[in-house]
Length: 415
Image (cartoon, rainbow, N blue to C red; front, side):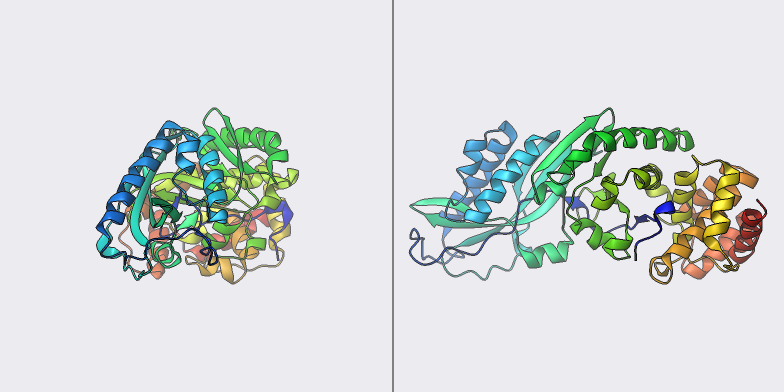
């Protein structure tokens, strides 16, 4: 069941890999009767390999120069689905502020090539950077399949399901559908055909949410990329809850599978894009995660999500926040706050509401600095098990999380 509309719950779940750019999985080979292809085994056909590497350079040059015709000329026209997705992918990248584009031969030792029908598979690293938004270029590890067709070498596919699974590849919106891109100041938002009708309103709400979050984090520059598309693939892959329960996810984009981080972005559920009442709260929550970036990635989950909810709800007067919290929590009793991913599974609505009122209580009664100091302490604390987080909280605030939740509940109910 979806979180209550009054306070929609969002998530920050750090995936193992970045959300990186790339093309679509190859379609099945055409039926017999298509143009003849070389029958030489890929492993021994050095001519095919040399021509394939030349094709990699051609595609890089065409993409960098914005030459759509030359780019699509490298694709096997008999692979109809792949040809269509390559055309869409090129058009999508043309709408983005893309720079530092390159295709490079990857680690061939890491690719087990079992083709024996004249096709050649090569690992190719695709690198690009969203200018003004990524601190460094981002590399996506792909696998390209080359074939001989009418005495030419052409590309017949650019993904491998098993390699993508190992690398944890999560497609970006421009990999999945035609996109519409809106940019305003430091905000870059990506929509698709199903969500673009709300784009103008979303951009206004994003600007308002950015201003609120910057008041809490004045050092944050307020530059980011937001996904507001109808495809929920990324949300499903990264969320600890079902898609229906998840209003959004914030996530790091890694420069390569083993890091470092190039940017923090967020994606929202398409139902939120069209929800006038929910959008502002969700945007503020996710932007709090983006603004904190790596600062809170070692925090217990209750603190990570409670801080974001506190920021999201901060536009409401404090006495009203207290009354709303008391209503939401009803007869809930004080308890130890959940530091692990069980936060999202056991009773996420209760988890979010209790974490939010605890963080609000600390920030309101002790000052926001106490909350940010606690987050920073976890950033450098030597913790080897989640149970040790209780000791950090007690040292910093003088209370256990059970005692904190008891005081926060009493504070809310006294409003």
